[in-house]
Image (cartoon, rainbow over all chains, first blue to last red; front, side):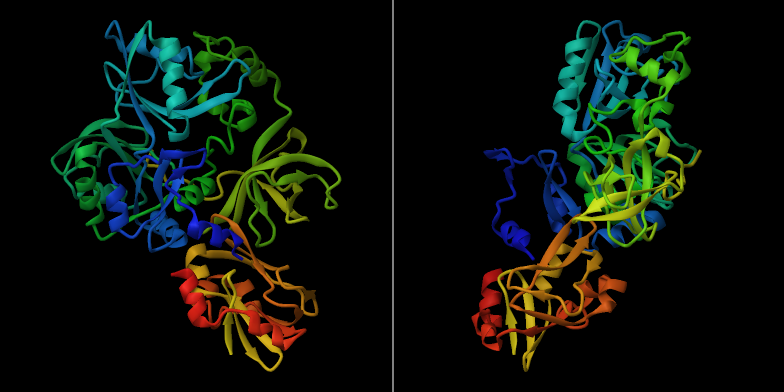
Amino acid sequence: MCRKLSQRASADYRRHPLDDTVELKRTPLYDFHLSLGAKMVPFAGYEMPVQYPAGVLKEHLHTREKAGLFDVSHMGQVILRAKTGRFEDAALAFESLVPVDILGLKEGRQRYGFFTDENGGILDDLMFSNRGDHLFVVVNAGCKDADIAHMKKHLADRVDLTVLDDRALLALQGPKAEAVLVSLGADVAGTKFMDVRDVVVNGVACIVSRSGYSGEDGFEISVPAANAVDIAKALLAHPDCEPIGLGARDSLRLEAGLCLYGNDIDTGTTPVEAGIEWAIQKARRKGGLREGGFPGAARILDELENDVSRRRVGLKPEGKAPVRNHAKLYSDAEGNSEIGEVSSGTFGPSFGGPVAMGYVPTGLTAPGTTVYAEVRGKYLPVTVTALPFVAPTFKR
Amino acid sequence: MLKFTAEHEWLKLEGDVATVGITTHAAEQLGDLVFVELPEVGAAFGKGDDAATVESVKAASEVYCPLDGEITEINQAIVDDPSLVNSDPQGAGWFFKLKLKNVADAGTLLNEAAYNELIA
């Protein structure tokens, strides 16, 4: 075993995989993670905690049972402020890159969106908030630099972009998340899913949204980098709050049916194929007040009308073996007819077995359909299953 | 006699049959196991052949057959509950029993002190 382990033992994981001399970046909580006994791994150019001593399974289960704290400071936090100073102008500018109703987003509210390209593919998915006189945008770490360049290139004439590289981002997720945050004096009890507000947490001014990536009720807390460790320590002091690594973050989001950019969505998938067309409100669709006007609009609007040839579906392996990213899918048990590919797969601790998502032809998307995934030379039956695998508990 | 391989397996030899598992170090490195696939009883392997597969939440790893031999028994308990490998990797978390083709081959493996030096 363990040709893999032997290599890992001697590898200097701090070297960037593509460049021997470039060091991995660290979030403001790096030393703190080490003090908690985290196992650090490279992720999106950063050294991040994949797990703490509790381990991935326990961390995952704890998050659904109580409250888990995640360091997601590697993600990009960006402010878009219109040169006119008006939110409407920032919203309209951003709408030129994102097929979502941003103008209609009320102040103090957040929405899910994505950048599209000329082919209708997806450049990144993101969250954005109406902060009164500006947009606050959070993008994935792996796409951060490309997203910022994309926004600057297309919006610089209308919008001033500021990267908040002096802020950390903490995610607090789980049924006890509100109680934990409230115990630090945060005025969040009256908030509901997708609200965003300025909140003082333990005496520190933070931006708090009621959202996350776990399928559970929870918050994302933007905090000044200088205060990040103190806030994390204060949250973890609550008996119900435990630190959670990226390993559990992945199994949580997969059980919740949420896409991971680079796995389930990329420039080769369109929003309709990916099943995230629900994020495209009427205003941007055919006949809407601001129909189209984003990259790839012709294709995307056509797909909204006329359907697509393949779709992302949930896949439940029938046995115990996990079926992972890139496993090929076949319509027959002998593996003669290749029909698609698994985009994400892991073991779901709350679900109690392996869970996966992948793309299959539109004719095979009905829940209960059996297809076959190639794993180590065998063709294992997997069943198309409605997402999510585990029901969400958002406070709506 | 307890022996180890550089690929992080242990063998407990009694006569010409070796009980084989993965070391505590390997189990710690892998993290929580969620899936184990064992060979068939009666299957013959050469030294270094893929004999079993383990999966943690994040990734799959192969367990190699440490010496030439034939599988005489497998530990169904770890298939039913992979966490047993994490909780007792060098005891109840054993993988399979191997009837060695040549008992003398075991002499080529590492003793405990040599293995501990390897992972230090």
